[in-house]
Length: 503
Ligand code: NAP
Ligand code: MG
Image 1 (cartoon, rainbow, N blue to C red):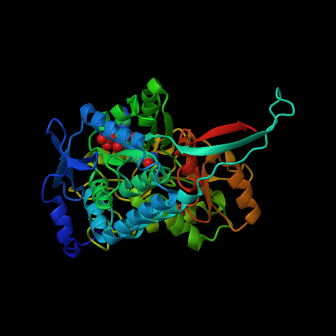
Image 2 (cartoon, helix red, strand yellow):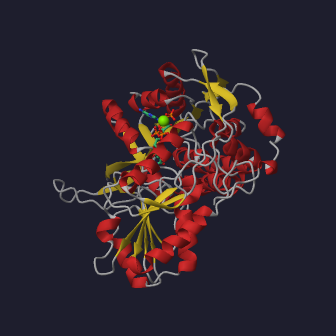
Image 3 (cartoon, rainbow, N blue to C red):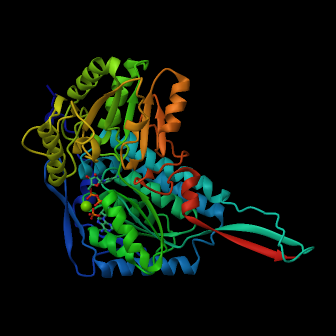
């Protein structure tokens, strides 16, 4: 029986959060907070209650044009890109400090707008977002080219001095999803700014608020107008950015379906594209794993953020010898999760982001059960109000079921046995995705071997979702193009110019 968090334990909304949401919000273009040119707005809703939090501008193509023009003129004017690296470093650091100075306000806003636990929002989303700005602050002074010894074949005896410069790409459009709104913004904004680019950030329609609070933080630091812009709108605003002839790069995180649309839209001016897309990540559990760690570890591997994570480990591939014991253990962990409002500090699992996602996720569960799966835990919506789904572990599943193949983006995993004789490589790679995976074993050789066999951009051993800002992150196969985090993002937000001087 899934426990329910107690609504009498809801924490009080902070005065600075009330003040932030008390009036209609504006978006941030060219260093000013502005309405949409049409004056239109849309509502953003608390998924725990369905209540309207506030309204934000409904940006259309004309607002996108305005933001792109602001970002273009800021880039060309050069005040940002030609600022000394040490100065840019200081600004990036101050953004991180600015986030931490308002950490509790950010955490409550994220919890109210997205539904996640306020404690998780504070400890993970807000802390990590600040950390990402601190990390990329350090990069500003370390973006280096190389000197390359050359021997120009048709200039025998000629002497040359050749080197590479790393220059910013230009105007960067950054389209982010609703699952980790502030963190996804930081993933993109921090490296783009440290490299000297200018940015237009488009948050998801469901979660625009922390991007606008980030704009307040950045506005207070006196960056040149137009270096950082936020446009709030729907998919058509994202599409206008992806198609825009004056945008030099588009970075996108979201569904593989929309990722493919971004690629198509970007063709007009062949802008640079990076994509961080969906996943159906395997968690491979061998019989020799430390089950006391692997049971809770794999459970949180698919339950973190209510399963609304691109890296969610939603395919448990479990060695047959321990299948019963292991899946029983994971089902018990799943069933013990406390479901409730993110503003209750005892909540483990909050609401999904929207009624649409609730229908999508319960639709997948129903399809799985109709296909013949059995729910060891959960299996349905939780309660009748709010967008809550019981943490669900499905067994008796095969690889033709949609619950096995498709990204569900809710607290739902399937468990399938494998035998040592057959190995697990084929099952692990039986997906069009390749974002992440984890391997649980005490055998170090086996861990390395399986890690090398899995086609995924990240493989964790005896852990899942153990991110670090210094570790490049991005997908193989249809999970994306390019690497975010680490030096990978510096590569994506710079272009290399070769200079060759005849001496
Ligand atoms: P989505 O449509 O891919 O949304 C991601 C972002 O893209 C949002 O900012 C969205 O704006 C924008 N967008 C939508 N259509 C666009 C277009 N044609 N051109 C440019 N930008 C566009 O994801 P979703 O609809 O929110 O969620 C649907 C499914 O996607 C989920 O169930 C999940 O499976 C997957 N998803 C994956 C991730 C991930 O991190 N891998 C994240 C989120 C969702 P609007 O919000 O205004 O539509
Ligand atoms: Mg959408």
